[in-house]
Length: 235
Ligand SMILES: C[S@@+](CC[C@H](N)C(=O)[O-])C[C@H]1O[C@@H](n2cnc3c(N)ncnc32)[C@H](O)[C@@H]1O
Image (tube, helix red, strand yellow):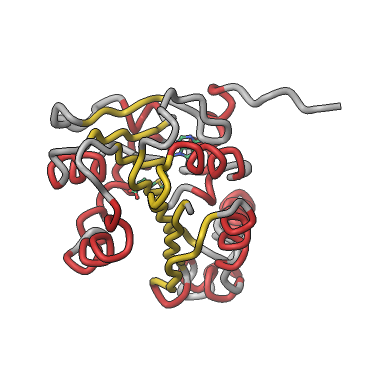
C-alpha cells in the first residue's frame, strides 16, 4: 500500500527538527555565512559553468531559498530575468528580504513540487545545501528537468559522506562525546545529524541526475571534500 503523501505541515515540522528546533536561531545560522560562500570565486564559477546559456526573459530558480539572499543577488545581477525562489520553512519566510520587482519567493514542498512554473522556461537552477534535507530528491529532480529549457543548467551544492571521525571531531574537538557532561539527548542529536548530513556520496547525486538524462558538466569537491559542487545540463 502507498504511504499517504506527507503534508506541508509535516515537512515543515521535520525541517524544524533538522534545523535544531529553534527557527530564529536556524535562520541566523544558515544566513550568516552567505557572503563568504558567495564570494568572487563563486560568481566566477557561476558565470563559467552555470550561466552559459542564459537569455533575456528566462527564469532563474533557487530551490530551498532560505530568506532569499541568492534570489535577491540573481535578480540584481540578471535584471532581464524573472527570479523565483522556493522555500517551505515559515521562519525563513516571516521577514523576507526586500526583493526587486523581478523576483519572488513561492511556498512549496520540494519533496513533491507543485509550483506552477512553465516547462522549458528556466535557464539556471540552484539547489544549495538542500538535497540532504529532502526525504527523497527524485520528484524535485524531475521537476527541474521539466522546468529547464534545453541547454539550461542545474547546480547542486551539498554536504556529502564523510567518516564519523571527521564529523565528530568538528562537533567535539576535545572528545567531549566521552564526557559524562555530554547528555544522551545531545549525543542522539549528534548521531542523527551525522546520518542526515551523510546521505549521499557525490557519485550518488551524479548517478541520480545522469540516470534522468542530464549531462554532467562539472563536479568538484569543496571544503576538503566535505561538500560537492555539481553542474548538469538538460540536453
Ligand atoms: C541549509 S538551508 C540553505 C539555504 C540557502 N539555499 C543557502 O544556501 O543559504 C536549506 C533550505 O532549504 C529549505 N528546505 C528544506 N526542505 C525543503 C522542502 N522540502 N521544500 C522547500 N524548501 C526546503 C530549508 O527550509 C532551508 O531554508
